[in-house]
Image (cartoon, rainbow, N blue to C red; front, side, top):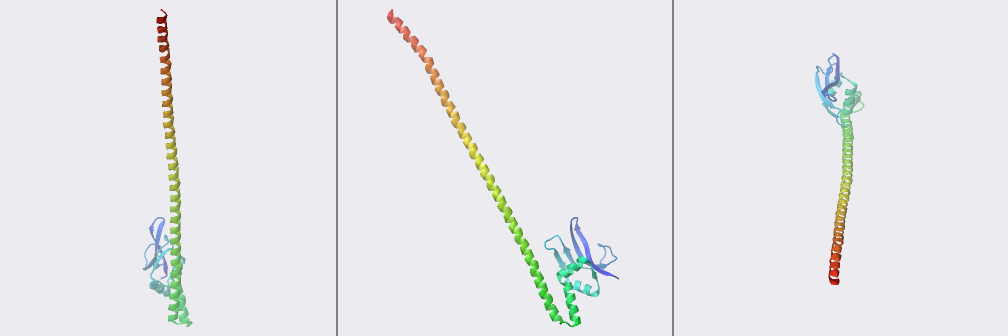
Length: 201
């Protein structure tokens, strides 16, 4: 029976994640499988891979053929490298202890690279958030300055309106006083002329 290591799709539309399975190559993609050996979630950055290293290696040694994507995942996790090292042990190039040492060194270097990428992405996200916060602060300051300027302008307009009203009131008072003086003057002249007439008679 031809056995393949492949991905079985799960998850909702436009947000798929995958199970890494060992299945008969004649079975449907998301159908029956022999064993599930891990999960693969490409929606995160970097992608999240949870793989049973020993089971994957055992199936690889037994002759299960991985698809291109699963082969890339196995290479990423070091399963393919372990198979390569075990081939060197069989040929007598080095012993199994040396192979394990090389594998551990490779895995440590790979983990360091992954952690460096995670830290870099986190730093970029923090820098972007800080930049956005600064932009929002600047916009808020500009908005506050515009509001203060508008309030100052309105206060100046109100003060000018008050002064104009006071000036109009003063002008009206002066006009009323002048009108009262003009009305009083003819009466005084009439009284004077009557007194003069009485004196002549």
